[in-house]
Structures are given as C-alpha cells and as structure tokens.
Length: 195
Image (cartoon, rainbow, N blue to C red; front, side, top):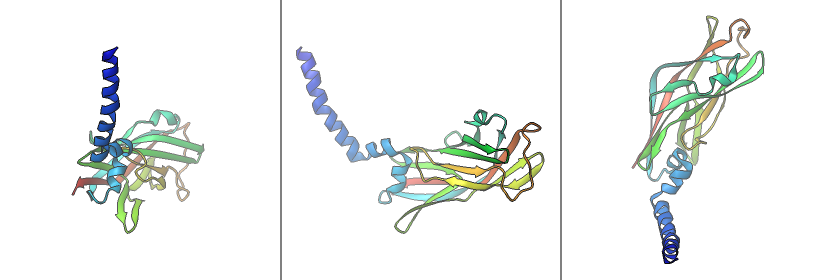
C-alpha cells in the first residue's frame, strides 16, 4: 500500500514539473503544432528559401483514383510530396491534391513544397509558385492550382491542381488510356533555423 502511495505522490509532483519544463523549452508547442509553431516564431527562428532544381513527376491512374494515394512526386528521404487525394467530379473535371511532409525539431525545420510560405508585414503569406504541367497521350499542357494551404499539418502543407484545365483541347478517355503524368518544377526548400 505504501508503495502505491509513494508512486501516486511521485506522479502528482513529478508530472507538473515535467509539463512545466516541456512548456518552458517550447517542446509542448512543437509537439502539438510542429513546423507551424516554428514558422510563426519570428523571434527565435529565421527563414531561408531555396529553389529546388529539376522536374518531378508522378503517374496518375484516373480509372482508380484511390490507387494513387501515397504515390511520391518528390522524395529525398527527409522531405516528401505525395498524392493525398484525387477528386473526380465528371469525365472532364479532375483534381489532384498533394501533401507535403518535412522534418522539425527544437533547432529548426525544413520543408519542400510547391507553395512558398514566408513572413510579410503583419503576418504570413503563402503562394503556389511551382510550375505544373500534365502529359496525356503525348499532349503536354499547363495545369493550374486549385487550392493551397498554410502549414496546417504538424509536418507540412497541401496544394491541389486541376488536371484538365478548361483552356485545353485535351479530352480524357479513361477507357482508352487512364494514365496522366503530372510534372512539377520550381519547388521550394524552406529552412527555418534558430537565430
């Protein structure tokens, strides 16, 4: 019985101390909010933006949208951009959404994205700056952003693209050929470091 009381007292005294120490070091916010906490902390962290050279592609199978989830557009083992969802509205209206995943710790964070996140007077902004194109049955055409987010996930953001823009003559026939290639260039490496 005495052992149980001692354990209970230790937990009741020790737990608040541990929580206080985690809070004071910033670990709790980092644990809950991840990269977003670091990005918002302009007092303690600086941000550097670097372009990523090259083109990065992923093949999308429109006949089975769910089969594309998790396919990598970009993967350098520490940073990933992967297909998170395909939305099919009708035979001529498809959207692909990509999720990004970076890394973070108390010393800083890194993230590769098609969206540029940066500080501006009075807050933050995010803009889709990558160049996106698609190739279907030998026809290559520009595709456009359908949506972007701030750093809404602990480890990254998301962005979406319309696969068949309204200004193209390309017609998708998934019974004949369901594969479309999506290619992005001008990706951006975000590096947050301690000041």
